[in-house]
Structures are given as structure tokens and as C-alpha cells.
Amino acid sequence: MKPRFSTGIFTVFLTCSTLLCGNAPEPADPDGIRRLTDQWRAHRRLIDLHQHIDYTPEHLACAVRIMDRAGIGLEVNLSGGTTTRQEGKQADFERNKGLADQLFPGRFVHYMNLDYADWDQADFSERAVKQVEEGHRLGAAGFKEFKRLGLYLRNGAGKLIQIDDPKLDPVWKRCAELGLPVSIHVADPKAFWLPYNDTNERWTELKDHPNWWFGDTNKYPSREALLGALTRVIARHPETTFVCVHFANNAEGLEWVERSLDTYPNMMADLAARIPEIGRHNPENVRRLFIKQQDRILFATDFQVYERLTLGSGGSGPLPTDDDAVAFFEKHWRWLETNDRQFEHMTPIQGDWKIDGVGLPASVLRKIYFDNARRLLVRALPLPMVGAAHIHKDFRPDARMKEPAWQVPAPVHVEYQLRDGAARPEVSTSVRILWSDRYLYLGYECPFTELTVFEPPDRTGERTGLWDRDVVEAFIGSDGENTQHYFEFEVSPNGERLDLELGGQTKGLAWNSGFESDVKVDRKAKVWSVTMRVPLNALSPIPPAAGTRWRLNLYRHDRAHDTFLAWNPTATATAHTPAKFGHLAFAEK
View (tube, rainbow, N blue to C red):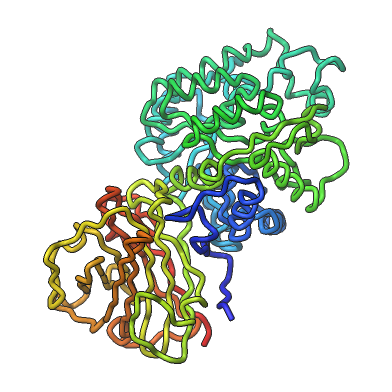
């Protein structure tokens, strides 16, 4: 029986056959693609980069309940709140993040919002930068700016605050320096500037939201002026990543979006609440654009939970149910994954028309659904967890992994680059973990194109610099008091190995854990495998029990692909970043 663990920690449990990785062929037929994406959803790999969830226990629970059904593992709440605080009180962002992280650890990341109350003060820019710095300190994953700039926010003299006001330049600059992506909403659909009457194709939506109509030229700038201000900001801050929400804020202008993405390498686009518009375009043109810009487009929905559910948009109609929300997400899958024609879109209030699916390749879907978001959020992703399945009978390491026990634990995958979190599915390395009363077992399967090793191998001692060639590594921390104290294990494809204690009493290569290993290289299948067996008493004087959690990170260096992979990327130049170690959970006996 497979061990069961709480889904509170952000987890990824997949086999190579269920994942587009390594030597697994990419499915091309619709049924094969759907099986693959269903498996991603079953294991909650997907990330929704654009949600708004009210920070109450009830609303957070509602969101998680629906996301569990939809297959979303991580929700990005763009309404995290401001970081300014009144005397004796927590800032809204700090309170909100604390509540969500306590109730549902690993299920949300949170963007901060800016407080404009001091806009008219001479030192507003400095105060705003301090807000950003405080958000970063408190764990904000990014910075969200709403469409209030250029449309709603006014200074003390009653003039609109512009998107490209120079007073905001220090904010955008500081976001870049701190690694905070900026999700920015400017303007709105074209119809919101057209006549406010029943000839408007979005009249059903506008009559329920009159404050969304901007056709009064005496009060509001043109839509084109707002988009122009946005691109000026993006151009002025090439080091800042701007996620332009609602499909670059111009879903009707496919050519404009393509031209802008071509022009500004620091610009990305999310899909939130705009598939009904994008789906009206020629599907072949959309598909071509999505394939061309596959590294710059992010899955997002604008799903909202307040006193009612909002499925991309809403109005005065019947209250949506959980089932309606699941159907809302299903329409996204259908549009992205199939070539179905002329079907009802997911947000009827946005317009009375049908959409055409774009049938994206599996490799592109993977990027849009989660790889691009993981790279964007690499600094702030929740720590992952892997489960070690308990065995009652020990066995010697055998890289063929024919022992039935190896089929019990769900594997994790080492497939993201250490520094930037970029996905490398072509060398995705699966790792399974077992434990007995005496040993910890690790089994790796590593697809390769060519191997880079020291020749001749030294299997009698330990080679300094082994990490500079092809190698797999495990960093294990059992010390609950000192996170800087952990153990390092490495094995190469030709059987060389080393073990180290770091932050403890033993220095250099003097420490000897007594661990054993076995390696097999299958040159026909282009996979090399290794198993390790580590004595538990070398890792801790107190043996783990069922439910114990240690700290862990897993790595692989592949010279041919010039990549250093991590289970949980550190977003630093080194694997020796204990704050980014995930969790190893020991399953019940």
C-alpha cells in the first residue's frame, strides 16, 4: 500500500511515464495529451497565476476545495494586501499571508499591493520603495498593480495618476532588484469604451458594472493611451519582469500582443479572464503565437472567492456553485488541449459567442500550465515534500531496482535548474526513497545523451571535485536545531562517490557514513541508474519514526546539457542553501 501524506505541502508525485520528461515520447494524439494533462491535474502540478481570494478561513477553504477538484496545486493570490501598518497592528499583507499559510500551508503564494495614501508627499517614491522592501521581507512572491492607474486613482488635485508617472519608476526598479515579478492590469476590453447601451456586445456585463465603462472622454483616457503608457514603463525597466494580465491587457489585438512580446523580452502575458476573447481569433493564428511565445504565456483564470464565486467575471445572475467552478476550469482545458470548434466559452456574461480550441502540443501545455510559473516564482515557491516508504526487510543496493519495494514510493523529479528554476524535462531525473529501521535508500533514474566522468575512476577513495562531472547528489539534514548542519552524498555514473558532513564536527572528506551504492549504465536506453543505502545512525543519533520529517534536497549535474538540476531550486549560485531544502517525510511502518 502506498504511503499517504498531507497535501498541505506543495508536492509533486509522478512517474516518468506520466510526465513529459526524459526519454518518454511526447503524446501527439488528443487522447494521449488528455491522459497526460489529466495526470498533471491528478497530481496537482498546475499553477493558477491569477486569483483573488478573500482572506477568511471560509473563503480560503472554499478556494482550496475547488482547486482540489480542478487539479490546481498552487494558487497565486494577487490580492495579498498592503504592507503599511497602523500602530499596534499587523499590516494587511502580513496578516493575510499568515492566515493562509497557517490554514493551508503550501497551497497559496501571495502578491503584495501598493498603498497610495501618501502620493502627494514629496517623498512618496522613497516610502513606496520601503513598502516593496517590506513585502519582500514578509515573503511576497510578487507585486500586483490593478487597473486603478490611469482610470481611478487621482492625486490631491483630482488628476488621474498615470501608469508611467516617474514617481513609480523607483518601485518598478526595486521590484527587479528583489526578484519580484510585477503583474499589472491596465485598460480593459475594447467594448468598455464603446457606447453604453444595448448595442454593445458586452452590455449584459456593463449594465451590471457601470463603473467599468470608460467611454466618457471627459473623464477617461483612450484605451490606446493606456496601452502606450504601459509599454513605455516596460521599455524603461528592462530588468523588471512585467506579467501583463488578461493576455497582455489586449486580448482583441493578437498582432499587438505578438509585436509587444517580440519587442520587450521582460514582458509576459497571463490568460486570466480573456480566453473568451482570444478564442474568437483564428485558432491557427492563436496556436502559432502560443507556440512561438511558449516561454512567455502563463495559465491564469481570474477565479475569485468573496461572498460569491466569480468565474472570470460575474454579475447579477444566479450564484455559481462549486460544480460551476469545476466546469469553468474544464472549459480552459478544452480550449487549450483540443481542436474542438464553436463551443460555449467559460464566462457567458462576457459575450454571446462561441470559441475555437487551439490544441497545443504537450510540451507547450506543460510550460503554460506550470513550468513558466515555476521559473517566474522560483524565489518564493513553497517547500516540497517527498515521502519515504517503509520496508521491513533490508537488501543490498542494486541499480536495476528489481526489488518490489521500489514500486511502492511515489517518485519525485529533479528537473528544474538550480539557479533560475527553468525546466529541463529532457533530463528529468526520477528519485524514489525507502527506509527501514536501519537504512535510508535512494534510487535515481537519469536519462542522458552522453556521460562526462573522471577517467580512470577511483572507486577505492573519494575524489574532490566529483561534483564537477556527471553526478547525482542528496543533501540530508536531520538536525532540527541547526539547519546549517547536514550531510552530502554523491555518486557518479562510473561508480565514484563521496560523502561529507557540513556544519558539524567533522571537516572535509574525513567523515565516513559507511554508505553503499550501485550503478548501472544502459547505453541503449540512454539511462543511468544508481541506488544508495545510507545507515540511519550515521545521520542522526535518534532514529526516525513514522511521521518524522527531515530536510532534503536532491540534485543532478549533467555536463552534456550544461545544467545543474535541483528537486527544489535554490535560486542561488549554490546547492548549499539549506533554507531551500524541502521535506523528507517518513511513512508509517
